[in-house]
Image (cartoon, rainbow, N blue to C red):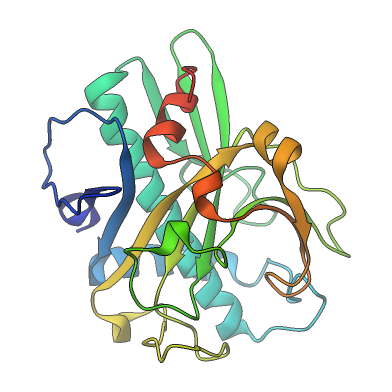
Length: 256
């Protein structure tokens, strides 16, 4: 289960911490999320309810098969669940007045309309943070150790496409990287395949951190070659964005 398998890891000194943990969140780097078959099944069940109502075209306008769309949705749901788990653990330890909910758990539209947000964080004083979780596939690297500092890897913020001129405003953008690659994309490093079903067995993803909307608007640059033609505001390299601990503090209104 994700709740038992999710690990935290310090940025500079690799350190695996089993749940439950009691640790200062200062300088928490990438979080390794390990998903088992039950996690995949849960994500796939949600994806199956969404796949026939999402846009069949890629951000660049090219048609995508149902299976391609389904795999992207499964990866997106796994990413949502990983970030939600990180937030829940942080709130339980440091901010008990804060909670987080997933849109797919509270929606009442029978999956007919686009998601206005992925996660919603709120406290008892009615402060609210709308969260977008970006999932991406790393094609050119197999190891996570130096991912944040490599100049090729970007953090993805708000975007627009030919069919989606402007995305609904979110407060925080998290980035989750997968090292397994769908068969419809090429891997430059011979990465294992991502199927989005039981064939994956146990799969890992890495919660890299992210950034707040204002940071992307102030320092981000527009990149179109990423994600099939979508015009993303990006921060490159990842180390110019926010680490996991900074994102957690921003969520509850503290300075990064």
